[in-house]
Amino acid sequence: MEPRGISFILIEIVMLDFGLLWVFLWEKGYQETDSVVSSVTTKVKGVTLTNTSTLGAMIWDVADYVIPPQEENTVFVMTNVILTLNQHQGRCPELPDDETECKEKSDCVPGYVSTHSNGIQTGDCVPYNDSIKTCEVFAWCPVEDDYHVPNNIWYPKFNFSKRNILPTINSTYLKNCIYDSQTDPFCPIFRLGKIVEAAEQNFQEMAVEGGVMALQINWDCNLDRAASHCVPKYSFRRLDNKDSAHTVSPGYNFRFAKYYKDSNGTESRTLVKAYGIRFDIIVFGKAGKFDVIPTMINIGSGLALFGVATVLCDIVVLYCMKKKYYYREKKYKYVEDYELGVSETYGTNS
Image (cartoon, rainbow, N blue to C red; front, top):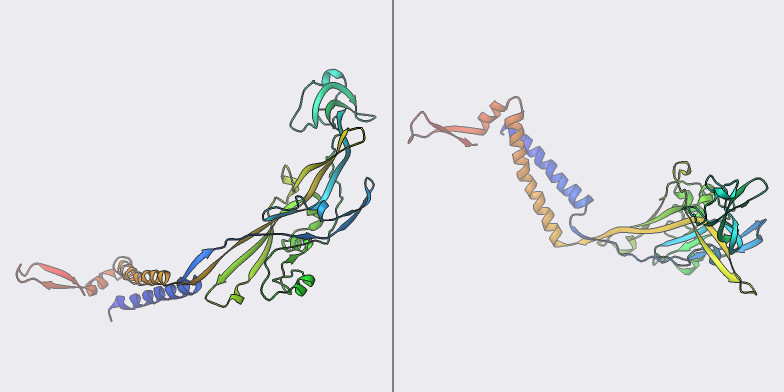
């Protein structure tokens, strides 16, 4: 056997193994694949009790802490709240800060409004409390004080389910199951605390300032097998910046108001600053099934690798190895051309 023959055989075997094991078996090169097209619906259930100095004892159900009631691929659960009760339009002192504190009327500019103002300055300097004066504003009064986030956290018995129910699941099972990666990996009902815990987060810390969680559902289906093998895999991770010390606006919150009128026709409102956890439900994956066209394409690509192996061996043996001159003599055989004369020879590939 020629010196390069063993190298050729070894490289060709490696190429063949790569084609069979990687392309065909691992990457399923014999299948036609397509990505997932999904539609997600959510449902939230549960009640909780709070007892604060402002509201007293109060029951909260899904109509109170799920805002808005329906979203596309998302559900928001309020876990903390700042309430400013009985606001009405009028004149009142602005919250004190470097720009709003004043000592006399000349410190206030009529009509001035900044990005963080609660209203428009009237130009008067009025007492905010016994020791501080601030510029008066025309706004919804009293203005909201959200400088100190309260720890009004509640722990609802929270479940949200999606229509990701396998054929083997019945209504009796759904009434009793809660998702667990070990015991109930296909139960589509999740507890809020378990989702946060599975993402390696602390629920108590996250509930104060809110956050954004991803519930990922991965479908990786081989349609050449039975349909019962096509099952989802769940995973969870936090999407927002959890380091509150290094971000301008940590967590997740928004404001909304509830309006009403008294018997005199005066409009008032209750301003709500809601902190909570938004759950984004992300579905991804792929499905594959045997098809002749990708099979033939990958077989042709694998056969082409044998030609590459030949060229690669020639380059290594003839130009890179120490005995390249010896190999070159063995690869090429020189013969004399009697028609052109004895002195001229030509090399031929052996």
